Image 1 (spheres, rainbow, N blue to C red):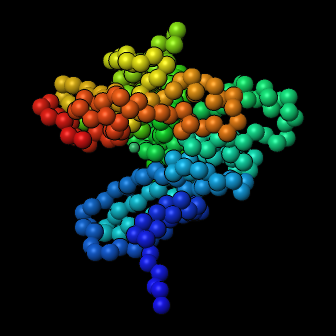
Image 2: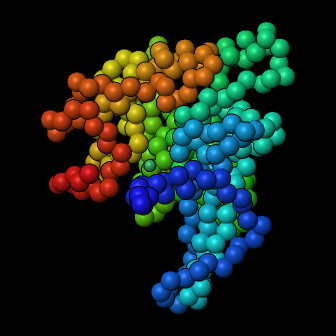
Image 3: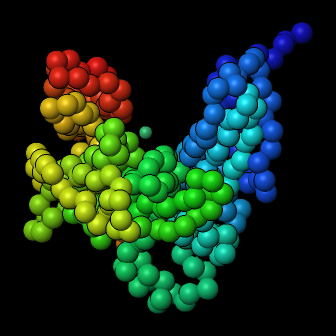
Length: 309
Ligand SMILES: [Fe+2]
């Protein structure tokens, strides 16, 4: 008799399962003991819905943004989760189709439009997603759920309600920033993003967002670009997932994973293209340690003398 052997990685499919949001926090099952002095809330983002209108969202980065909250108090834990009401989510739910193109899933055209208006829809450009499923961090006294585009979404960390969609392009010269900023002890936020400037000039801009101002003003209004690093390649900026920061230095690695801007611009007019289709690898380009082709995802630790990755 042949016994079936479960592949150790078979459980990975679980991460693509759609879940329902909760109406109220539920008690968590605790294994072990949580010290009674440990209190507070842990917020985490992730994908929570992988189908719209019977069509799949193809990539782990495409599921609709779900915000999770664990509240710790007196050795007890409650768990709560809500979908963030992004435009990507609300419009997908309303129209029952993928309306905004995600990293690995192209939006479907509106079937109600006739062929001529569909044609002009393609050439008008596909909207940039605000599906903020990657991370959540504070700016000033507010919390923002983020992905890697120019849109961030302000949420209420207590109720998990969605408060406001913010376009970073209104405040900063960037086309998007990473989901992994650095925050100083006083609340100052540093981040980095691609900047597609005039005459197709390309650069990586490091931006600084000050801490809460102690008045009604928004820290984003006082944000600015503090360093600009030119791209070594015209029309092909490198993908940036994170950067390093020490007391004295920013550490930026221009790596071989490239965004092909010509593909990117033309892909907007071709049905079925997603962000992922515009990525390519420059196999002849090293990243400074004599190796070729790798992708540096996360800077884990950086100090003035040595860099760990
Ligand atoms: Fe990441």
